[in-house]
Image (tube, rainbow, N blue to C red; front, side, top):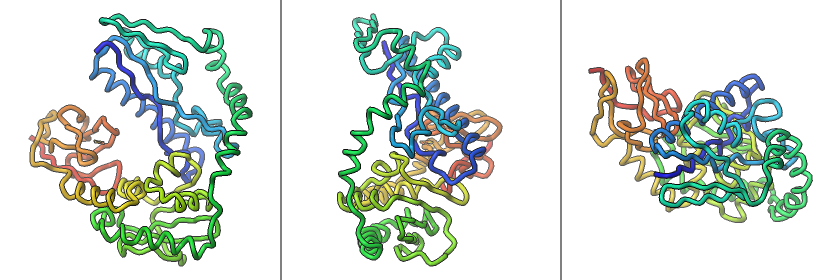
Length: 348
Ligand code: FES
């Protein structure tokens, strides 16, 4: 490998969208930024290319309600490390690697192991100015992009009545819930959705969607009615992409992150939900073991089947899978990152 192009920044709504006190958001955001850097370094080491180009991120937010989520956040509650920050971390951690700022206008010429990098859009001074006065740059972009944002908002649908919205979601989701008992078991709780004035509950143990009736729920979302109406109109099957990644919502939960719930929200079609149901049936454990230190552990990560002989590391009885940084307590088999997903392990 001559050059490695790697994601280094986040593409997720945690913890910004969550119903948490600011101090906790700041704490979780810091942990998330550190985990992202660690993950990028892990792959950089694995690929072992002499040249590294951090790319794919960070996102930018120019809507007034979202503006504070740029970079590390106006209140230090966001997770979006920028190129220059990551390059500095990389230089400190792996001084021998030749790392390059990869941004619009960068041209990379790779020829028989020789790597040449040039920049066709910006001068050095302009690039320095962008990163030195990042919030000034965001502000300039925010003003310029308002026209595009207004145009985009015109494409949003007008919400139907609360009754019609409930009926439409019920008719769509309930048959999907019934097709995916393993997914519903994994969620194993009621989820409240506040959509404008409408409050509904998706009761996964009963595979039912109904009006919310002051019940105790474990997870909750508050999504603008226009966004839900748009996704209903477009019959969008991946609300994780079309709503959650926009960070135009708030969420809360009791307990840990529930992978199954977000999987449901990105599989809102028969084809996808069947695939997921089959996948959960077949996944997790193919019976093979690997040795990691003093432990014999199932080879496949219970999350997305990463090969733990490559992606797993054990410290003090805690296994970390570097693919998504999930952690497992090997003595009990418990996943420390989310509900379910037990791991098979025994001490040698
Ligand atoms: S595959 Fe995602 S954490 Fe292991």
